[in-house]
Length: 215
Image 1 (cartoon, helix red, strand yellow):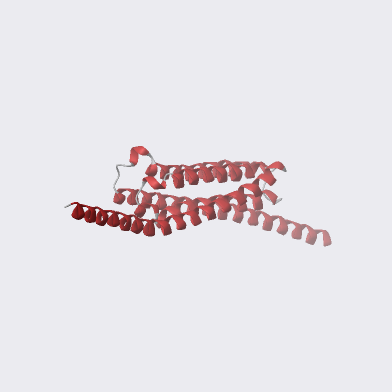
Image 2 (image 1 turned 90 degrees about the vertical axis):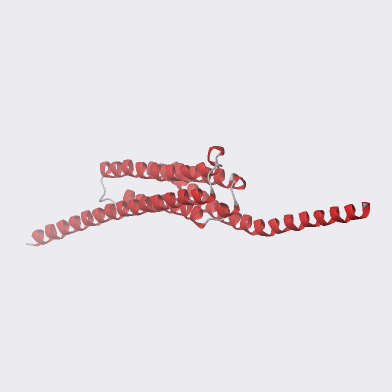
């Protein structure tokens, strides 16, 4: 009898070890991918923040938005990845989570590039640049709020959600931030077109003045 109990115990122990090993095999690649994604996002945001910080110290106030929101993005990403173990592997490895962070990063980067071009142009008046920056601030704040909504997935209050519910919620956030990325890109293009039109107008006026002067 004792022998049978001992054999049964060993069998159960072996099953437990095999199950744990299987979980480890499944989980390890997922966590490795997450770690790589997190590192990539962090490096992008840190580089952007560092570059913006140099300009801010040089007196470029418009790049303060880049600095603030890239640092906020870093903190939100940390909160998300720190809380990942509270949700299932299906949600942890969901590609659209990475998509939300990537698009938020592109929003900040695209703003940073466009505002620097506009700031350096002699054809954009200071009051125009100020008005643009006010609108950009609202856009960046809205996209950051979308990223903040992602944190609710790993909050204790939302742990009762099913994986399907979480994924549908993430899908909505991805669609929302896609629209926000499209909006800021449109605003960038509109501002740059206005800048080029002002430049062309100034050049035409110079050409006309030169022609009249020659007469």
